[in-house]
Amino acid sequence: MPAFIETIEYVFLLIALGYGVARAGILKEHSAEGIADFVFTVAVPLLLFRTMLFADFGEAQPWRLWGAYFAAVALTWTLSHLIIRIFFGRDARSGVVAGVTGAFSNLLLLGIPFVLGVYGADGLAVLSVLLSVHLAVMMAASIILFEWAVRADGLVSDPVGIGRLVSRFFRQLLQNPLIIGIACGLALRLSGLPLPAVGLRLVDALASVAVPLALISVGMGFVRFGVSGQIMPAILLAGVKLLVMPAVALVMALLLDLPPLTAKIVVASASLPAGINSWLIASRFNTGFRLASTAMTLGTAAAAVTTLFWLALAEAVFG
Image (cartoon, rainbow, N blue to C red; front, side, top):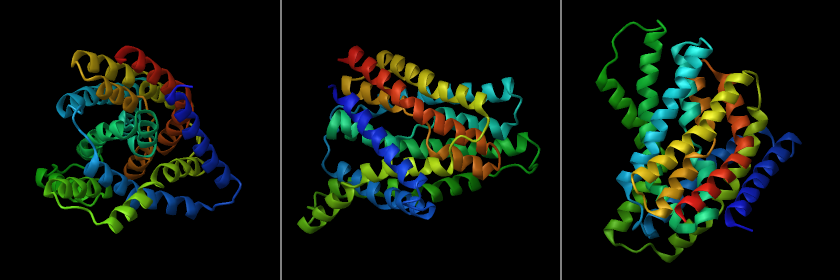
């Protein structure tokens, strides 16, 4: 059995387990939030710390990797925004939520398990290069477009201050555990200092639980969010995310002549469904809750098939 098929089975079985224990009430809602917080603030940052410390980044090709991936982000974000604004007549804030839903891959909770399971430590090293800028770029875009949207919808009339935007962006960025984990790993690597044996053992122990707990928390989250209306626009946005974005990423990987492993990571990352970020941004804008929730849920379910297709196609194209 190909590694990517086995990995997809593993990933979605753990998601189903999380959903099952939450739906049955074995673990309560506050437990789901606690697990997700632990994954985001401790386990995954330490996994990225360890990756930065020991990984071989020889084939990562960061500029071309970022160019291929974010070209796909820009196109699908724009397309998703236009679909909601033109075909469904929604306001600018809903358009921004739609853009995030159509372009913000769940690289953390789904991307790391997929890439680690299919491509191993070398693949995770390449993904980490993408993760190192992904959150910053998407946060910056979301903050800027949020400020534009509230003014376009007539909710705020005063001009936005660039200094305020920059300050808010860097404050949020520097407080993010993922960025801290990556930065600390790179700093220790560049310093040449060894990590004490007991420290390495502690990092290994906590990092090893990142993948299963991340997937279980995804499944538990669906009990809270789930399908809550807005079916047709949600299906369209999920289709853009799962079909258009990886197609653009594949074309860009070919045009930029990415190394095989890097190209596969770009396509795999683009093929992943939207995650909780779309719902969080909808909460911040106080609009589009049901759209983000439904698109996230339907997209994650459909990704069991579509991601398998894109992984197989990337393997055939890039060898």
